[in-house]
Length: 334
Image (cartoon, rainbow, N blue to C red):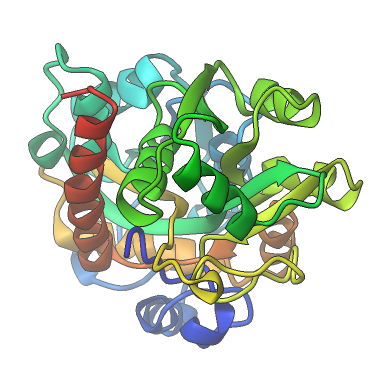
């Protein structure tokens, strides 16, 4: 199975909207006073904090950063400055933070940075050495959508197997969802489909509605409006259980395919960030994510809380790296 994330399924996490025992422990550790986990970290922060978003304003990373930044600044009694440093698929912002002092006053939000070298082979960025994983904040499963023509996943798989190359599947070139799509069809479903590149999910969804492609793997929040409007059909959700956003859509597992995949957004600090400061940041994020308004906004974005902590974050990053390197070979990125 691929990308098995805590937080996709609230029944498996024991929280109303996802999360983990680690996050719960951090929350109670911080409850006696905002973020007071370790004596060495008590003085933090001593000046304004910079929260780097390595993408343009308006996307999920940016929204989560601004939501949490506002509440962190209240607890820390220091400004939290949101700084968008877009470029290189997140690489520019990651490089910037990697060069900051490891004092907790600069961190960034991103997907799995271990995938960056797959798409940026000439970069000097060494993710395992240059940044410090702190915690995964939120995530959500992928959804495979098809045209609203009544064909099910089983119907499409049958066509793909009997007529190799006949079906067209949209992909966003040079992205992790591109790798996820390749892995799904070539390693899990074991069928031959043509992958049609697009520059954005919006373009791919428009092509699907227009009948130019047959399927597209994307986030639930991207596809949900078209599915609810009846212009597209949800074929399968890539999580362990059905999602409350589209409860009528069966999982891949229910349809005979051991496949879970999706996205997550986590926090990283500079190289050499001390463990006590990483734990302090994890605790403070866990505290603010208990605020009902923030939890409701995250749920409205089609995401679940995860709050994994550093150890679980590293484990998932490495597991995904192995899978994504395999998938990169399938699309000739190695």
